[in-house]
Image (cartoon, rainbow, N blue to C red; front, side, top):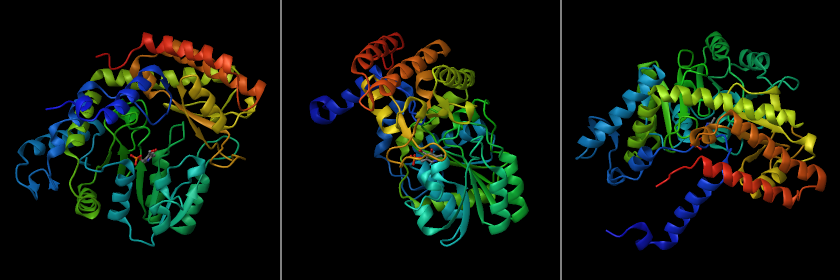
Length: 419
Ligand code: PLP
């Protein structure tokens, strides 16, 4: 009956410290968000105690009546939200959702085609450091060097020439709309499966402000914690029940044991929230805010990769301010603005240094920032980066302190987790 604070003050201090950090800084990491109290409650619930290997109605353990209901709610809400016939809500993460597709549709040694990591793709789309790159033959496409838009011609040429068994679309650092239909056309031409990893865009798709891949892809994977604003986790969707059967076997018993029933309940809560009209408005505001941030940064001399954004995310080329990604991340952190360094297409710097940062609007939009606040944030970022342009990588401590004060004011005007 002891509280966390009483039972384990050391761990409690980290949770409290993290709460204070989230409250007092501006979160611009594009893959993060701020979940509702209801999602937190479900994720922190007694459902964590329950073993439920299998699927609703077909479990390997007794006592699953209640968790069967919460998992079914998550499945039904996911299918409604994304207009599809099949959902597996058990993957522990986005990486595991992708692994489940590989396990269901490929054999080790098979060939697949994905977007390369240094052009905006994800680690699990064939990076040599990842299992996807070690166990399969990987072909990669990228973006055009001049427009920074996906090089569809290159993708089609590779697909026709090398005939991969699976083509993957979807990215971690690509701000524009993706032409899902074009991928499907070439997949059909060569008899390949077409998978979309919509992890970054899922909330925008749910809100109807980014094109849905569901009518086009054989199978769609996603995380549930980015724009979709649910608990940390993954999911696999399909319009084809036969592919669904293969995915179910791949997730369990193929890859995972007991599902995280507390997280699945929290997914159900988040999907319920995303089905409400307010979420559509949130999704639209997320894009409006990203565009406001991009235009303020461009006005201050920064370059936005591809010239702008159709989504929640943008890549900023820092070279006009003579800044590297690693230096920018550090000085912005001191000013209370949290970002991540990110390679830009054709980056001359190593991936541990980079010439860019990736910025996103999902978390700030959740806390209530609008276009005016995002424009202000753009100017605060530019003020801090001007410090690097003037003084080198160490930046300008005085400006950083002034910006930190303004960040605190903004955060106080838009509080999170008030009680
Ligand atoms: N797919 C894409 C496109 C992502 O951006 C990410 C997260 O960064 C993942 C998959 C992996 O998700 P997770 O970190 O939950 O494994």
